[in-house]
Image (cartoon, protein in one colour):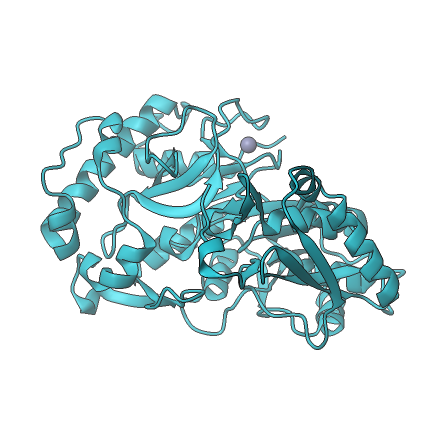
Length: 452
Ligand SMILES: [Zn+2]
């Protein structure tokens, strides 16, 4: 098994270009990474404090001498970005080359605006190039199912990264017509695909439903990103296409990329030269004990335009203390399965999340996607979309059965919590792009408090 290519990349970023004194020969150590990260944290703190109106106040009275001191530094949140995003910026407007506006879901108001300098877009391309080298190289033909029309968009930056690897890219954008995209995959002899889990699933399940059913697509590698990846989707892709399936973690605030799996496909290796990650207890804010699950918090180490310090992501994951089978010294994090906000509290500490429903439902043959709405009360309404290989009445029955028998619903029923289920056929178009899927909460506000 090949070691993650991120290790050499992180080493080069930490030590600088090979000096010819043989620095390139010795392996990176955890101590070296930590020493570098502490130096970069200090640098980021002093830069942010001296240049940004927000941080001047936010970081007053805060000094860090060790990584442990970081626990005393106040968090930054999505709310801070919404309310005072522009006050985070540390450079003049002329140095900002891209502003990404993230609309808030729900009623929380103002969108988030994330500012990047030209140099920071280069950091993203550089990460993509090294991360993608896990699965593609010269001569590959990569289909990108992410938005890529505008300069600086994720698809555009990924395309630039692939060019550096000598790979060709087809910036397709989200799948809106699965058979047409599948035809393109065959015609263009696509060898790798990057996209959102349900979008790539739609292509795989369309395979069994179209003229291509007797042909295996040439795609050997798939990278899934933008949303959590249900095991059931990974299995379907592996079985249908005989491909390898990798998972990428990132968000715009991180500078798009946070980490990517190696050939062991056993958790993300993190982008440790650019980001410092912590896992915290989301209730107390204290660091989670080693290996325990909590909320992912990160600090940018190399961003000058809009550094983010102890930014709470709302994502839940844990570090994996055991060494990765690939043998790297880089840290490893479990794939993010749930978000704090995505948990639907049902009472008695029980909750339902999209991940629970995904694992149950995507195992059903022919299921393409589904939507979930909760309310009024604990009434869960599911609308499911299947391909033509499955008759709708059978699909509805099967969907109801798997959800009723899922672990979470059985637990809820055992505790005598009222819980009702209604399963319908999803009418109309279903391919809705690359937005994160979540359970829509239409209960009375008192019931909708999400928590842990
Ligand atoms: Zn590894």
